[in-house]
Image (cartoon, rainbow, N blue to C red):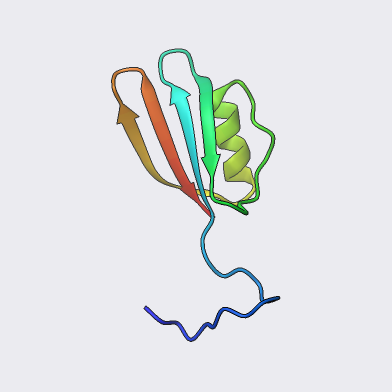
Length: 79
């Protein structure tokens, strides 16, 4: 899909940033966070709900919530 953009050094980023937040669903603790290379981030909090709320507050949207096993949840977010 070509939107007429040409990659030129010094131009603004026009793609999407992706963040994956891994949480323990049983005790609401943050397990880890993975981000795309230049994604804007906030400091994480040991509480998963607080970390998700911080990313929502800076403009990320939840794309998907994926249960992994019976005790892990992945929040996939984009901005």
